[in-house]
Length: 181
Image 1 (cartoon, rainbow, N blue to C red):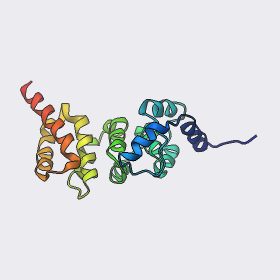
Image 2: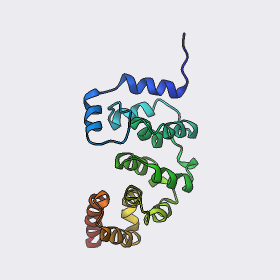
Image 3: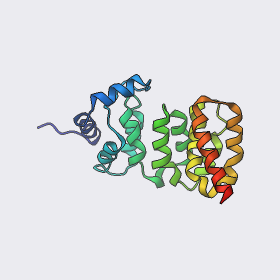
Image 4: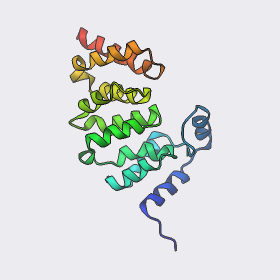
């Protein structure tokens, strides 16, 4: 009988739940991954719940940058207290898509005590997707820190970047709402 390590078992779960139709749509939309199983986030979350929260597995998943589902699952199994600010910045700088960045910020980085400092440290990046990550992380903190965030939002809006335009509009609406309240 063949025994599989955790990473192999996890990949077998991805394979068992694959959805060719969704995978084709993701690929045709220009996704930067050679390997797409077509799982949705609830499916990935369900698989993540079957595995321990541990740095080693999360790092293995993140290193598997060819696979969409691996990158989406990595923040779900990374322990919050083991994520350093430096590693958080590196993952944001390496993120290949807005989808991965969204999950990274929502599932992991927004819970770090230094989340705002991380966002500020990359807000001036030359890479559009990294700045998107800064804004996405700030957006998770907007309710309590909108006054700190507003100058970064205004600076990004002046860039006129297609990658960050949508998040900028949503953040501006939220800040306007908070100002009224």
